Image (cartoon, rainbow, N blue to C red; front, side, top):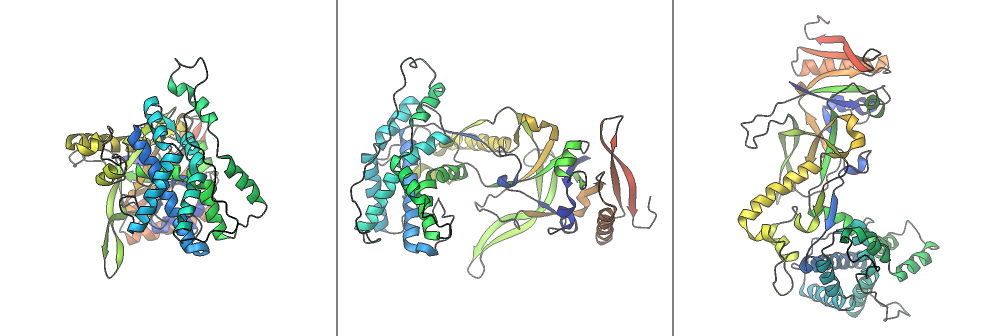
Length: 489
């Protein structure tokens, strides 16, 4: 038998969410976790001219549709304007929209020297990281925005303001020359030199300073325009990770209930409890040949659509494996251009690996060759599962094992979808914290007694935590064993 432990506060168990009575395990988003490095993958961008140009093309496409929605919907469009849209270069909703996009793209390539810049990045063979990529996009963002607005003016989609100056200065993207004496240095070692030489287009800083005095946070239209002018490059780069992996959520467990720090941090300062779960041992005869312990949870197992109900999720019990967290100094490196696993193969080939005249990137082997595709798929998902169980070494004392639930249906799930039910038989016991109030213990015991009757369970153990001077850690012992026949121990 394999046991895992989950610390909870009284409020989590008995308060608003009633986790104990509802038999639920909540899967938190990465933003809800206490370590900002959770889920961090060291994403780099390193590729040939084709993929770099297609990245800029994708950025301009997303920026175009962001402007389009703000113009069409005006103040009615909600804040938090979506970045990645349904419309792509190969499926614009109308020939007119497609023509406008192509015209803007051709102009941007010429005036911002995107072709030359993509060629320089290929020749350098450098690994570009998030901050540097954001700088690249900030450098061109205002210029591209002005091109988009001029297209809207010329096509009568937006009225040209009085006094609007048609001419504006563009700042082409260029790779700066390296200081003398760095010729023999590894390219990655001069990252800071290149990064420091890239600055946000000066006009955007002027706009931001001019805007401070009249900013109205309740003006939806103004907030959306600001999102496009100032925030879009950073938000876009953040969204790119969704092309690599699905959204994933985590529920945290540990292999030991003996850490005083764990009781303090996660057990509400020893005033909460530690739930004991008995895992189902993996079966090496299963299709995945896995012996990893699991727990069965009621969760989304499918998705469908019909005319009467529209889109609907299918629910059922399915095993979720416990992943042992690996502690290391730094996360593994992931190349964005070769690890886009959350996009269909045809879209990947059309939108990212093929240029305008039909040349295919040398990075596309796993899409165009069936054998390479299978090898890549296995390696890609192995790396994903490895990285979602990564934490830095300072967290090693937690001995964490986690349940990870990821949405293969490419949706962002609300809290209700991520609150999954377990079979009551999986709950093997409850440990009360050293500072837990007696009234809270009685409330928990009453709920457990009712559940034992509901699920025809003969017995259930309760334990009390205490500090052991001899062992120098938190220990626990049985204080009460509920018995259905009334012979309580």
